[in-house]
Image (cartoon, rainbow, N blue to C red):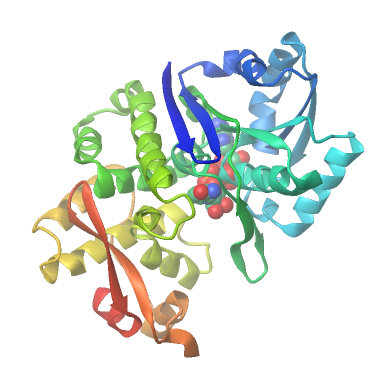
Length: 353
Ligand SMILES: NC(=O)c1ccc[n+]([C@@H]2O[C@H](COP(=O)([O-])OP(=O)(O)OC[C@H]3O[C@@H](n4cnc5c(N)ncnc54)[C@H](O)[C@@H]3O)[C@@H](O)[C@H]2O)c1
C-alpha cells in the first residue's frame, strides 16, 4: 500500500492508495473511528455500482451505515441540494461525534466536505474519491465548496478530512470522458512539478501499461499536491501553480456555455496555448509547447484554441469590469517540471491569449 502523510499546522492525515482497497474500506475507517453510526454521501451512479458492497463491508465491521444519495453531476453542488443533505442527515439524527464519508467524484467530495465543515459547526469526515480527478486533485488539500447562481465554488471553506482512501481499481467503471478529463490535471502536475511524471506518461504504449502503473501515477500527483498545499494551504502564493492552464481554460469552458468543453479539455487548451505564447516570448524553453501538445493528443485531449470572440474571452477572464486595472498572476512553465508565477498588469493578458 502507498501512503502519504499530509502535515499541516492544525491537521495531519493519511492518504492511502492501493488497488482493491475498497475491500478494506471498513477496516481502515475503523482504525480511526470507533462509534457505530456512519453517514455516507454519494451520488446515484457511484451508489449503483459500489453502494451495496460498501454497505456490507461497513456492517461487517460493526458500523451502522446511513446513505444519502444525490443526483450525479455539478448541479448537486447547489444550495438546494446542500439543504436537502443537511435535512437527510438531521432526520437520521446525526451528532457532532459521528463520521461522514464522501464516496464519489469531486462533486460529492466538495459537497460532502462543505456539509461536514458546516453542519452542527463541524463533523469529522473522510474522503473516498472515485473519479480520477477526485483521486489526484479534489480530495486532497481541504478545499470544499458549493456553487451559487453567480458562479462556481463561491461558498466554501478549507476543511480537511481525517483520511483519504483511494482504490485506483474503481476507475475501471468510470466513463472514458471523465477519465480523460482527469488526465488533463495529471498532465498538469507533470508540467508544473515533475518531469519524471511527464516522461512516464509519454512512455506508456498501451492503456494496460498505463493502468498497471496507475497507483504510482496517483501517488505522484497526490504527493505534488501535498507539497504545494503544505507550503501554501490557504492559496495565497505557490498553490496558484496548480492553476496552470486554468485561466484560459475557464474562458474556453465559459464561452461555450460549459457544454462543449469539459473542465479538463479547457485546461488542456489553456496549458498548450499559454505555453505557446510564453515560448514565443522567450519565457519558456523552446519545444515545451510541442511536448505538451503531443502528450495531450496521446490522452485524447484537445489543444487548439477554438474560434472565440476576443471580447467574450476578455469578459470571461474578468477584463471587462471596471476593476480591470491592477494585476493578474499568470502561471508559466519554464521547462517541463518547472513552473513559476508571473505577475502582469491585467491589460497585458492579451499578449497571452
Ligand atoms: N476541492 C478541490 O480542490 C477541487 C479541485 C478540482 C475540482 N474540484 C471540483 O470537482 C468537481 C468535478 O469532479 P469530477 O470530475 O470527479 O466530477 P463528478 O463528481 O461529477 O464525477 C464525474 C462523473 O463520474 C461518475 N463517477 C464517479 N466515480 C465513478 C466511478 N468510480 N465509476 C463510475 N462512475 C463514477 C459520477 O457519478 C459523475 O457522473 C467540480 O465540481 C470541481 O469544482 C474540486
